Length: 141
Image (cartoon, rainbow, N blue to C red; front, side):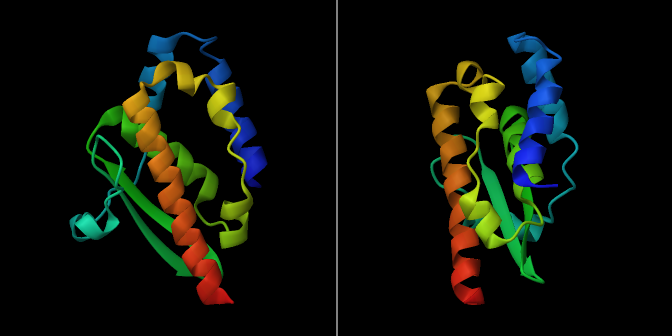
């Protein structure tokens, strides 16, 4: 699936809650529980995302021209947010990651549901993943 198709699926899933913030946040937290466990040795300061109030780790790898992401967080809502980013970008090429316009956040009303601190953290997660993609793209060329 393309990043656009994945985002459209996310939007479709979130529309089931018809803007109910409480149900949406519970769903977001449930999504985070679906993340595969991240090895403890990948939860180092090297892979910690700066700018997040919660602890968020993004451990990238690069195989066969694609970026693979192991992610985790110490809080449920943030774990759900990083889950969504992983769903969109895991197994994509660096170019796909760098060229993705993340429109799903506005469409599902995430900006209304998370505070400014968490919103800044989300932007830091996006920036970190895109920086990894850029580094792999440079390495590839």
